[in-house]
Length: 334
Image (cartoon, rainbow, N blue to C red):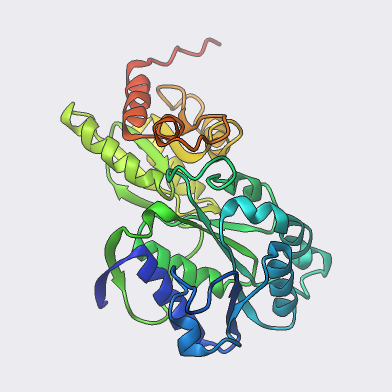
C-alpha cells in the first residue's frame, strides 16, 4: 500500500477530495469552507469541484445540519462542518431528534447518511465557550455514531468510512493534532471500519485507554513509565460509538489494570461508561479500581497557564497508572 507522510489536515483534505471525486452524491457545506476563505481540511476543494459541491453557508448551525439532513433523505451524502464544537448545541435538535431518529421512525425505510465534522480547540487558550469536548453528549444518543481520530492515517480512513456510512456520524477533529504528521495510505477508498480500536503500544502491566489527543499523552506517559520498568499498553478507541468493547476487555483482562483518559470533563464523561463496563465484565479479575483522567469539572479558563491545569497530561496519566500499580484488590468474601 503506497503511503506518504502528511499532516492530519492534509490527510482529511485527501479523504474529502477522494470522496468528492468518487461519488457525485458527496458534497460539503459549512461556514467559510470554500476558497479563498478555507484554511483547514476543505482548502482548495471549492476551486477544484465548484461552489455547487463545496457550499459556503450562512452562520446558522441549525440550517447547516438541517439542510444536510434534507439532502441525505433525497439521496445525497452531505458532509457538514460545524466550525467549533461549542457551537454544535445550536444544531443539536436537528442531530438528535431528526438525523439520529430517522431510521427508527421510518421502520428502516429512510436513513440520514450525513457526516458532521467539527473541531475541538482545547488547549489553545480560546476560553470557556470555544474549547469544549462535548462528544459524551452524542454518545448518549441512540442512532448517532461518534468518531475521534488521533493520527493522520486514522483520520483519512475513518472520515472515508463515515462519509459512506448509512447512519449519521459525528466526526470530531482536534485542532492541536491538525499539524501532526504520519504515514497515510494515498489510494482512493482506503477506509478503517468504524468500531475497531487500535493498540498503539503493546504492554503487560497496565492498559491506558484514550482517543484523539489523549492518545499522544498516553504514549508519552507510557515512555515515562517504561523508565521505571512498567509496561503500559495504549489502546486508541478511535470510535466512541460503536465502542470496541471486545478489544478493551481483552487488553484489561491481560494487564488487570486500567486508566481511561480524555479531554472531555471527567465527571459523566466517556471514561465513566468504560469504567462501568470494566467493572461489570471483569469484576474479580482486575487488580485495582479503574482510574479516570479527564478535564477538570470547571469552565475552561482563557489563561494558558490555568488551562494547562484543566486538561490531562502525561504527568497525570503516570500518577494514575502508579496508583493502580500500588493498589491491591481485597479478596471478596463469600
